[in-house]
Length: 224
Image 1 (tube, rainbow, N blue to C red):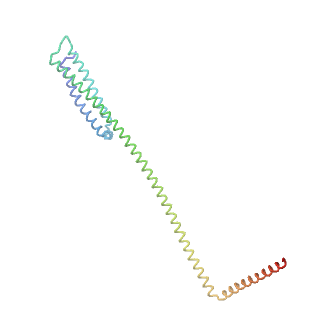
Image 2 (cartoon, rainbow, N blue to C red):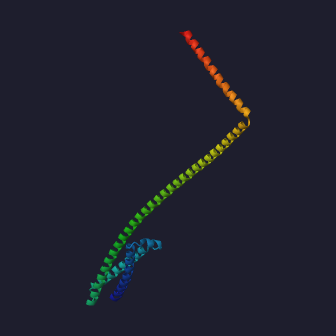
Image 3 (cartoon, rainbow, N blue to C red):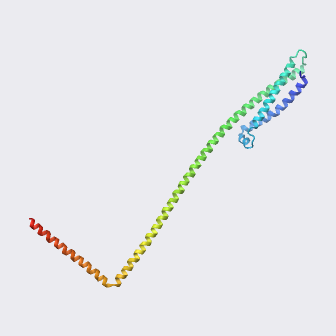
């Protein structure tokens, strides 16, 4: 059976190691509570707190086993411990209970902090997704507006081209009319011929009207 001195030294060593490791674990819990969990992910140490937690649990288990061995020495009838040994064993038990309670409290804080961090991460992801969707909608709307602007520009360009063609045709027609007037003015015979044709048309129209009128009168006279 392991002696008291060896167990006492082992217990003190485990307490020292546990205290150091628990401090590291507490700092990680504090970092997570401050919202630095994303920094741990970015640095590739996302599982660091799990490794530290496992190490703390192992040390706590070893410390429990050592304290049980010390408690067994306290009740050994073949070699009863002294009062100083009993006080030391009791102190080790108290330290173990304090460490155990502190570890459970810190572990609960880590779990709560991780839950909050995961919740906030989910909310941020939803916000980012909404922003991305809104940005896509704005880009699509801008694309449609740009397309409408291009279509409007094409229509305006076609209108300007058509107006230019009309203007060109109007100038051509005006030029043709001017040339015709010049030709007519330089050929008086044509003017006379045109005047005779117009006079003959008027005369024929008058004669035709008289004939129709006389025929109508004769027809009415015959009827009545």
